[in-house]
Length: 322
Image (cartoon, rainbow, N blue to C red; front, side, top):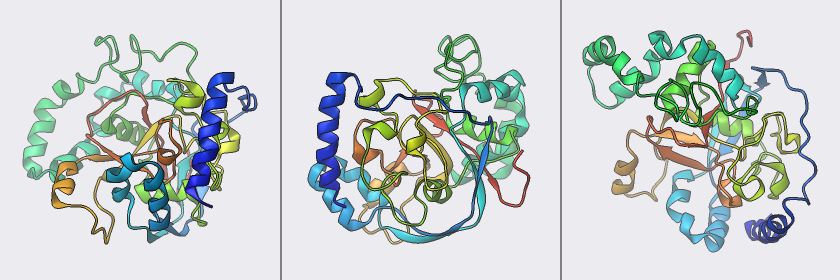
């Protein structure tokens, strides 16, 4: 399977779908899903990242992506232990439970991610504790919605999600908001390797559904404009494990810091230092098949809250799902 073949299919699809208003895609019918549903992932061994052959093909078509692709390399074998992951990105309705329960003011949900960030950045534990005790309230008070009057995602208004979008992925949240929500549920953010394994399985596929890009299997700018879609749609785009929306709809925060993969000799010290201390987002709402791949990764500051950034949660195996 050649990426250039994907590119040709993509190019035709974009032109036709833009002209016909996506009429070539099947109706985006909703189906029943269970709120807060976790999918059990059995674990296994897979190759994480971008193979050089495919990278060369992508660069031949999308040269502007060169600086991003090197962060996906080299592809390397990873062993994944069994775990659970959210079937869908966290929805506005689910996130509203956290907001309405006073989650923003509950220090217990925020401590772990904030302390990890402080220690990674070189702060002494006692300095973090002092800041956490005396300055946390002032810090979280900045996490307001679009009105700057109520706490909540940057895409919300007056403390509530956009009307009619209760089942759309929550977006406009920072890494720390994502981590706090997962802690509220008794869960955690998935690791980067867990996220990619849940999206790709063991066969090295490029997209969650296979190796051929299909505009109709994911939500993206060319298909949906600037809007997201409900999480109970696009079943055809599910991963080998039945996990939904791992290509398109929203970018998703994952655990850890953005660092080179083991054995990466393509990055300069300047490139590495430029991204030092940033967090990782997987997936994207972008409009190119090259950045809708399951191995695509991007660095963002932990406090960034751009529209289109959401998340899903994970949980260790052996524990109840709820």
